[in-house]
Amino acid sequence: MTQLKKQLFQFSTITLILLLIPFQLFAAEVGNGHEPLDLTSSSIGFIALIIFALAYFFVMAEEFTHLRKSKPVILAAGIIWGMIGWVYMDHGLSEMAEHAVRHNLLEYAELMLFLLVAMTYINGMEERRVFDALRSWLIRKGFSFRQLFWLTGVLAFFISPVADNLTTALLMCAVVLAVGGTNTRFVSIACINIVVAANAGGAFSPFGDITTLMVWQKGMINFWGFFALFLPSVVNFVVPAAIMHFAIPNENPKASNEVIPMKRGAKRIIALFLLTIVTAVSFHNFLGLPPVIGMLTGLSYLQFLGFYLKKTKYKCISCEQYSSEKQSDTANVDEIIAFDVFKPVAKAEWDTLFFFYGVVLCVGGLGFLGYLSMASEIMYTQWGPTSANIAVGVLSAIVDNIPVMFAVLTMNPDMSTGQWLLVTMTAGVGGSLLSIGSAAGVALMGQARGQYTFFGHLKWAPAIAIGYVASIGTHMWFNSNLF
Image 1: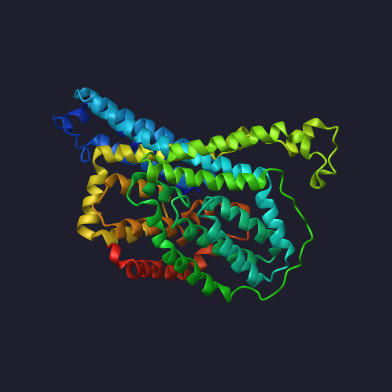
Image 2: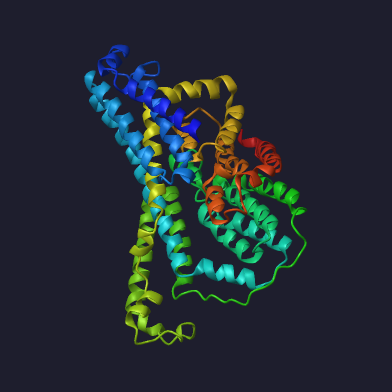
């Protein structure tokens, strides 16, 4: 730990020294003109890279420092664009920098509002006990460990295309922990399977992951085009699951008789969420409008349902599932039966949303400096798109797939639909190679602390890698007409 602190101190010292260099030196290194300035070989460019690397170091160390990941990237984004603004103003090109940052801000706003609506619906279903009811049903059925291993994996695969992979993984992990108890071997392997399944399921749907949503909203692939990845995604999940199956204890856990009923309006929220998805797709496909407009329209559905439930709450006081509640306790009735749409909004993953802001602005700034064009030249011209897209998946196992995918979209290489589908899939499922490669894996390490660990996941990395390679081969064979 002492050595780490020493390295951090040296790194910080170098960064401070570079920051103290007079900004006039930066201006001398860039050229005049009305095209974006190439700052890749300038001091300001190097400082921007150091700042982003330092910020991302703190993001990856969140589990140990307990510093929320949004804080360092938001600060880094402000510093990077502040330096860009200073240099461009010195060259009389401030409007160009302003236009660039507004473009990045608009891209973020669309994705942020889209995700906010989706998170609100998911939190609304959680508040109405939809996920608790599903968990209790699975536990009551008395499945064997091997049956539960496959059942939680299959459910994670098919729920994550609609709900996000993080929520899906947490739900299935709760089932595994409730049934597995102290059986660490089962819990560890089942959690690995859930992470792989949730990431694979999210790869073939525009709603399954932030990266697929970004690709869809950018117009690289149409809504139905993503479903060409269904079979490769199945292969990505089934191959490692089949290998891990034989390591699961062939035993039957003790069943539970716990019954958790859903609250009033739960089924209607599920139906309205599906209607909201249809609305978003229709706005984009038939009206040529951004999907976020359809999602925000769908939020109004939930608001009207909340209004209806509030006005009619006393109709349900005598319902059988609430018969144990004291009817005279008005506050309790409000909490159990009525529905306030702003409570799910407040419970949205705001740290994730602001982290996304920092990432988009940081990567956008590095792109404006010229680094993404340089990377695109190396990866997509020298290596070729197939090798580059496979490498993107491996990189996403170490670095979060959001900045990786946003960088690829900003590079905007000239690729076929098959190649865009390939990079969409690899960026989504590549994070399964390591437990820290996806939000689902990181969350489950916290939820199943001591039972699902980094090294426990690493032990099965070869099996996951086989599934990764097999899914790429399946895509290139099955969707060969798209290349």
